[in-house]
Image 1 (cartoon, rainbow, N blue to C red):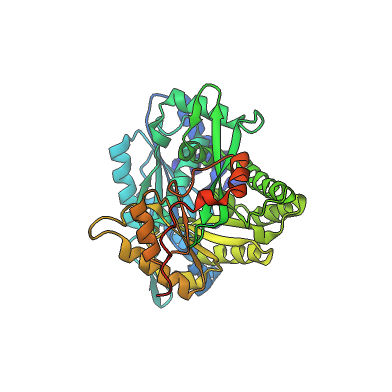
Image 2 (cartoon, rainbow, N blue to C red):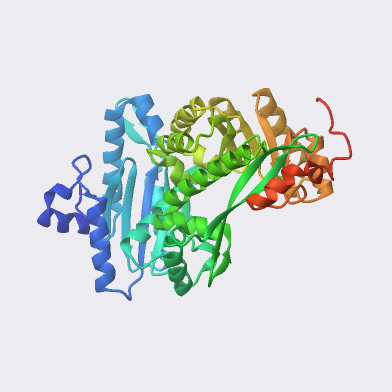
Length: 452
């Protein structure tokens, strides 16, 4: 197998940092090589790719680990033979590889990424069969996507995760959240790392109502108010939190705060059936996530059936079997599982039967199109029918107009959430709403349609 620049350097310095299966350097050693290159030539653009083999776990399950190892060696060999003389290649672990391509601006780096995917298209000969091992690729660029090796690799890793969520076999470019300028991003990063200790994070709760307009649950929504930056858009700072590695403590704080608030309401005699908490893909993938949830329930005294965790469709599709196993552990604690943003994951609806779910949340993009001619009403109705046959509840989220409400009712959705029903409120506002439930029934003067 041809040695690349990073391998030669590491072999001379520390042979222990070489992956014994593929002969490539390990990820930590590549990070050092990349950091040194950035330091020595800060004016030179660099492309950083992270490649992941699609559905590699299923290859191991079907063909065995020996076959999986042979496929990894073949992929490493093809990447090594393609690699430019000044490039570096490493195995990050599992099915992932990293490629560093110095001197490439965005267009050239994108073309190189496409070429990498192309070299993996021919089948791999394995005994008496041919295996097609497609891959996904995430690409980040120095300096626009980060000024350090760690940040560039992290952003490329997040991009490849998004590529796999789209179904695999594609190249995904890392993008700067909301187009932040470097100085804005630097300021926001530092502020976000201190947001928890400075008590700048808070929760709002949005009502979820049933067919009769009665309160059946709340979704906890995170808000960040910074003294200088003001109210930061949620999507922006959540994505940034994932990229800089602080999403786990923030997610744990949201879960614990929501559960403690539920207990406080109940102790005050206000009966909220349950609270739904969003879970970041990176948080859900953490090995200790289930134990963390168990610990929060134990420490707050809240029963598991009062908690609902919302997991995005893309998160689950990365590895359905592993996701299902983790979800079964949570449901064993009584926790309800909702699949969020349903319908945008480039996958057949029939995979629902493989997942231990309780709730399907129809993505707001479908709700916003439901009133248009040739709009999304048939899609929403199809999702509802399928979910009901599986015994699942259906929530239409993002309902903002009377027309949308009328049609999600016609589609037989069980529950509704959105600004038409109620704005996200602080805990005191929710307490007032529970004492005056008639405030939620304003738009429900027409009886909800019956069965199918």
